[in-house]
Amino acid sequence: MDMTVSVWGAISALIIAIVLILKRVPPAYGMVAGALIGGLIGGVNITNTVTLMMEGAQDIISAVLRIMAAGVLAGVLIESGAASSIAKTIVKKLGEKRALLALALATTILTAVGVFVDVAVITVSPIALAIAKRANLSKTAILLAMIGGGKAGNIMSPNPNAIAAADAFKVPLTSVMVAGVIPAVFGLVITYILAKKLANKGSFVESKEIEMKDNAKAPIFITALVAPIVTIILLALRPFFGINIDPMIALPIGGIVGAIAMRKSKYINAYAISGLNKMSGVAIMLLGTGTLAGIIANSELKDVVTQALSASGLPPYLLAPASGIFMSAATASTTAGTAVASTVFSSTILGLGVSAVAGAAMVQAGATVLDHLPHGSFFHSTAGSVNMNMKERLKLMPYESLIGLTLAIVSTLIFGVFKLFG
Image 1 (spheres, rainbow, N blue to C red):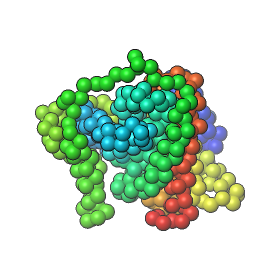
Image 2 (image 1 turned 90 degrees about the vertical axis):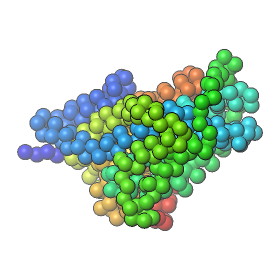
Image 3 (image 1 turned 45 degrees about the vertical axis):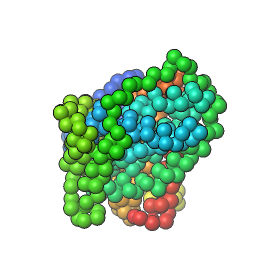
Image 4 (image 1 turned 180 degrees about the horizontal axis):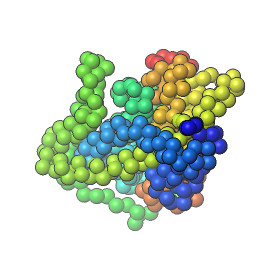
């Protein structure tokens, strides 16, 4: 029995998933429904369609397990006040004159050490609103600074997107994280330049919007850094000493050691529960992306895309960032976009002579270009963090795309054009 989905079937799967997500259907259900209907439209019977969906979901299980383990680290950083302590220290040290740089850098560091981008923005936003009021900065400027910083930090972090890329390309997580460092620096610079240009454009913060939480029990900066430092050291043992500590072990250990260092060991279970709750939505969404990836991976679409790229005369390595861009646009998520693009196109990208680390890096960077579209939760959660209306939030999208495009271009220059570290 033929189990190859037609091009139209694969495209239908994506369109149906997007429409359902726009209709506020949970992304996981939207992608499952899209995969099922797309498989049937693509000429595969219902039994084989379900088989392809199951196989796609199975391919993502290892990444899901590692993401669940990352919940311990995320829970410790967020619930203990460590993330807030790190952000406030950075902003305080740089001062109000460099407020936009401080906000961008704070969200960069928070996402780089394992906090989700939207959570990092929400964590920093109370500080940002207070500073914006004193320094007379627009909401547009402070939100772009936080989002751009978050995008930069996200491509060099142990976050779900990096885990998904590392897993699909079968490379160490630390390699993917290091591959994002140089593009992240360029992204941070562009973020600051754009945010400065928008400093007086858009609405401004009102006094009633400022709400600073009492941080009397927040840990000091040094102990707040213990959890991410321990995690990074454990992950770095493989490339430096050949000792393989899987992220499924390194991430929770880093969180536990961090909680102990902050003298909050009695709250470890509570932090783990909170972190698991935060990760469960991502894990479930990824299972949905797995079903969609199963349909697309077994369709003629990837062959058509590859042939079109060859016929255009463009370099074959462009498939990596292009697939990340395309899939992030479809899912409005860095994580889902990276996961689908990596799962579907990794074998093709490797077959074109691109190294595994280079492929993972370029796919992930590409997935930051359009991950902020309105059918995703990131668009709405970031708008809510600074009380921004829909019209103003929409105007911010071209600047976000420009920052993501910077990350993708620099990553492609490094790993595709010059092959410096591939």
